[in-house]
Amino acid sequence: MDRKKFIQSLLGTSALAAMPYSSFAGESNEILDLLKGLEKPVSGSMYGFSAAPIPKLKVGIIGLGNRGAGLIEMFQYMVEKGQCEIVALCDIREKQVSKAVEKLATFQSIKPVTYTGKDDVWKDLVTQDNVDLVLVTTPWRWHTPMALYAMENDKHVACEVPIAYTMEDCWNLVRTAERTKKHCIMIENCCYNEEELFVLNMIENGVFGDVTHTEGAYLHDLRAHMLSEEYYEGQWRLKQHVTRDGNFYTTHGLGPIANYLKIGRGDNFAHLSSMSSRELNLSETAKRLNASEQVFKCGDMNNTMIRTEKGKTILLQFDVHTGRPYSRINKVVGTKAVHDGYPSRLFIDTEEPVFWGHNWLGDEEYSTYKTKYQHPLIKKMKSVSQQFKQGHGGMDFVMMYRLVRCLNLGLPLDLNVYDGVMWSAITPLSELSTASKSLSIPIPDFTGGKWKEERELEIMRRLASD
Image (cartoon, rainbow, N blue to C red; front, side, top):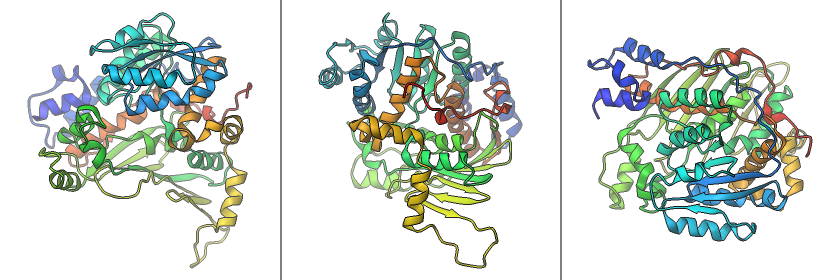
């Protein structure tokens, strides 16, 4: 890919007309000018936005592969409570649609309308009259087009991660959500994990004092998944690693951190710098298994550093090439305490600094904190459904429960379009920085300045009906 096409792939199609023909090597001002040229006026009007209550939410799901098929199960509790029903299912593969219909029939009596066979058949689902919410669980390249089309057709949208991976798409999503007044959120399940909610509740209750630094990651050995001919249909995820280099999967680590730092609710991302290691692990595995002869551009490890407007820092790591145990790191450093994830450990500082003897809390003390600061949402969900442990240890169910109930009650959602766009934009910006010798890249303000207003986190809110 030549340099001009590379820049266009990150910024979007409208950048092509403004793009100079010179090489961008060392020409940082031209990159920054192109980024500035993409910015569009936005109002921040989707903060606190609530739509009319939908007592029985009608859901249409596009994409019934590994993720979409798994999320169907998360609706069972709400379907049985009469809070929602799945009225439409879509996948280009008829086999996947049939399997999803069979699964749904185990807990829902009403048969959904099904769509299959053509690349654009998903548009028929979006225009189905009785669909309230479109759930997008397709390969990444479809996320933004489907979300935009759904909003234009008077539907709310919940989209898998990332919701966008060009800067132009990020701006288009914000502007369309504000104009159509439709919810458009990225469903980031790690924001609903028990550990992350426990840490968030401690932060909200002052246990950490002032937070100064955080670390998050997606460290997940996906070699077998990406090299498989079946797991990711057509190896679509592997192909990302052939042409791109940066942090492709920001949101699992960054979503919870954004809550910790109240990004968009009193602070905002300011700028980033990104760097990748050389690539070795994926290509050596592919050769050993005779699974692929492609050359991979993406380095084994990407490190992206982000600084916020208030001077807090974030280290975000991405590595799906290396054989290792899974980790999202989940580190929080404050003036009174430190947390490290995987495994979860907690340190509480003393009034007077010591010369040595800094130790993590023992099991008994840690358990005391975990019990005291267990998030109210986790307490509630453990008591309402035996299905709590479904979906990545339970967080998928909690996420879908909150989405359905907020729409039922006509309340603002836990996350909004600005959250999804801000977290997703880190990917193309990390690619620009990595390709430009770790150039510091400014992160646009997608909120129209509304991030400066201090707001409570919606995820800390109790629902009256619960």
